Amino acid sequence: MMRVIGIDLGTTNSACGVWMADGVKLIPNSLGEFLTPSVVGVDAEGKVIVGQSAKERLLYHPDKTIAAFKRWMGSDYSIKLKDQNFTAIELSSLILRALKADAEAFLGETVSEAVISVPAYFNDNQRLATKQAAELAGLKVQRLINEPTAAAMAYGLHEKNDGTFLILDLGGGTFDVSLLEFFDGIMEVHASAGDNYLGGEDFVNAMIETVLNEHGVKREELVDNQLQQLYRQMEMAKRALGTQEQTLELELGSKSVEQKITLDWFARLATPLLVRIKQPIERALRDSKTERSAIDDVLLVGGSTRLAAFRSTIAKMFGRFPAANLDPDTVVASGAAIQAGLIMRDEALEDVVLTDVCPYTLGTGVVNEASPDQGNLFMPIIERNTTVPVSISRKVYNAYDNQDQLRIRVYQGEHRLVRKNVLLGELLVDVTPLPEGQEVVEIRYSYDMNGLLEVDATVQSTGKTYNKIIEHVPGTLTEETKQASLERLAKLKFHPREGEENRTLLARGERLYESSLGTRREYIAELMAYFEKALESQNAIEIAQARQQISRALDEIEGESLF
Image 1 (cartoon, rainbow, N blue to C red):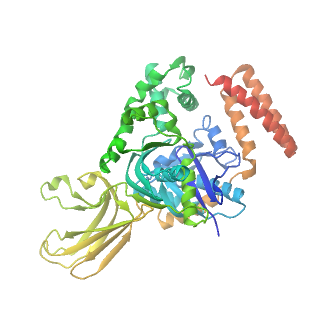
Image 2: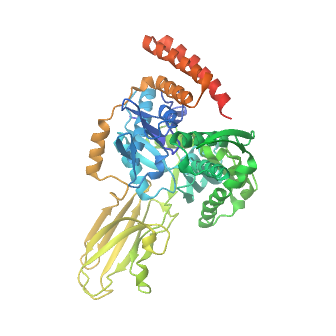
Image 3: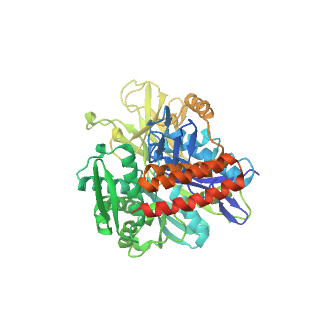
């Protein structure tokens, strides 16, 4: 039977795993790492590079490299790399393509099916976009699983404890909250909430804005490589917070300045973001009617949960320290792999019954008779945090005499006015011309475990049913554009997977050379010349030895230059 892999397609890093007879196996990439940076670039030869080698080029080639594009999933935003434009769907497909190649190399067989995790608070557009990215990468999505739910599966099988758990997933670009109960092999999600624009990247950006303000420098005064260098320094400083105070030497436009990084300094700038973190948590508790005291454990997922300020905030909210006994960077991929194992019905895997919820309210627009100038009102059909799969119907009526057609617009959101919610699509329904309020149309929304919506409308007078699966919404691809993307991506040139270690080391050396001066720059140039000579020999043993030596030397240089 062909194996189904589990994928965590992350904002900052991505990972994948597979269920084997002895449990989850995380799949290493060509560098032997379990995390692949979600970064795509185009090199000097016009070839596409993905992962760590692309990340190494982000600092000095920002016009040819892009990261954090997951935030644009479900939008029409287009990104230019060198002389080519890419959508977020296409960029995500390139990451998925790399993960698929890693899985095939690890398993020694073709991989064509996957379970892919998405933020619990991803809307319908973003979920469809994720599915389409997988299709462009040659993967059939067996299931989209919410990231906190995937993490809960990994924790549930790891600990095998019954109880009520709050999963907090703070990644590079999104924050998700899921409240669930685990009992007798049943995992029931009671509520989900979140913020699709809150993650580790926002803490780094807040640090950058604070530094610029303190030194009276505007962002536009920084050249691209200065901004990328500042970003990298702030990212490294953020990670080191809690273990040491730091004094950084920064180049800000024409200024060379020193910046002290302390816990108190960080706590002040992070306060608005930490307030935003509390809001989805409180909403999930309210929606599920759960008291804080009823939570048996708070589980942390996502690399950004390592922040001391985040953990302190959560500890104060719940009067205890949260649990983080599984690797927060890979736990979602592990859970997705478990779900993939369940889909394959692997006999070695204990059966787990999983329920999830609809994260947003889904409804339609109805006439606003009281205040017509405000636009139509939102009529909820499936309320947020309803257990899925679910199918619910509501009746609507013709709004005026002799109306012969109803335009049923499908919205997602929480606002009482439809114009402030997300329009997902519409369905045109022919009705019998009758006096106002005499024609009845029953609208049924059916929402599945992948978070995808189907709409049926049955006209009472004729008995005719109209149907629409919501797709081709803004930020997703029509069948025509999907084929065009497939053809365009097929023409892209990629480096062979087996040379990734060498390309990454060369890109790293280039980055350190460009950020250095004087004797250190000369030393790096000598190292890279030595490595290039080894590559020219085409002797695998000589190349491996040179790579090991130079990697150690660059580690030492980088260790000296961080602070």
